[in-house]
Length: 150
Image (cartoon, rainbow, N blue to C red; front, side, top):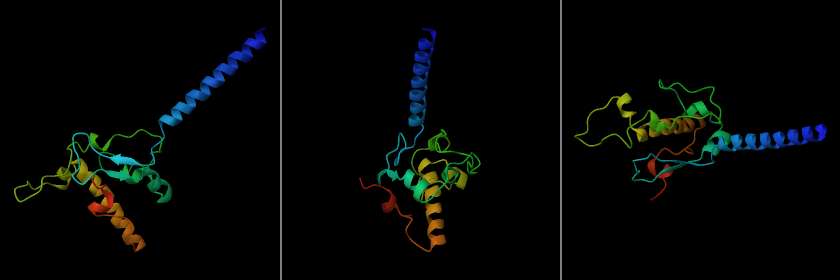
């Protein structure tokens, strides 16, 4: 009787461990596409549908190429299953910097406080570097190529 009970308990624990590990893995996967939008701000050009899986798998972009610390240094040891802060946590101002002749002159640091400006800098600089390195125009860096039409 003891052996039968031990087998049943072991089986139950094993099944529970299997479900727990599956739920942990499922909770840490990253979607193929991420809609880059900021709460409290709606882009007039439409939200960018960022092809996360394509960038990491096909283009071999590492996590640290986009995700960085407070000093702008890449998070080199970051893995796909690690939790990361949302960009708005540090780039706290929704939208883009003020524009026009009456707009204040902002330093680079002040400009990057705007969430959309941080996205633009990160993405556009990477795309331009890719194009230059590969003598191509394949990586988009204009508004219409990245923003979904509204």
